[in-house]
Amino acid sequence: DLIEEWGEIANSAEDTVIASLDFDVSTVELVLTEDGVRFPGEDPTTPPLVTWPDIVTIAQDEKGAYVLRPGERAERFQVFSEDTSRAVSLMPSSPGYAPTALIAGFSMHRFGVGVDPMEDTARKIA
Image (cartoon, rainbow, N blue to C red; front, side):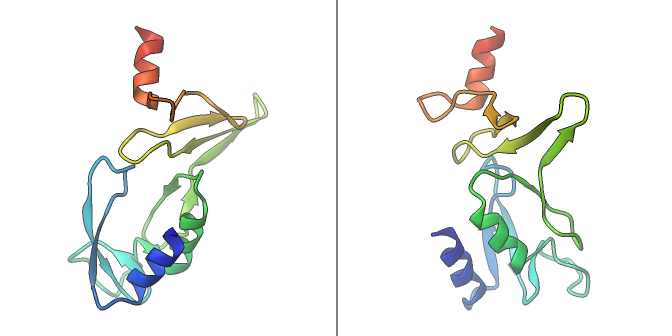
């Protein structure tokens, strides 16, 4: 379980972790601190990229994608259109693949059935 994994990381003797911040397209080294996670070389007196309570929130939300800004709460990537009265958000599909767009709760891409959102989009516009 991801929450237990992050808890183990937070309480481990390790002071760095390799993680992906972009749907497993790439990985970066992150420094684990008492107040959260930050990039290497950052001033330890500045706010972390993400706090431990926000990491727990993110780990519990399998359908959300989050925007991380140092010193701010992690923000779920979603907007609401007053014109259409619909919510739009991103949802992770599979590790290493692009997220799918959700409009009013409906996925705009096929995924998990042998096709990922990028391939589905390419097929639709071909």
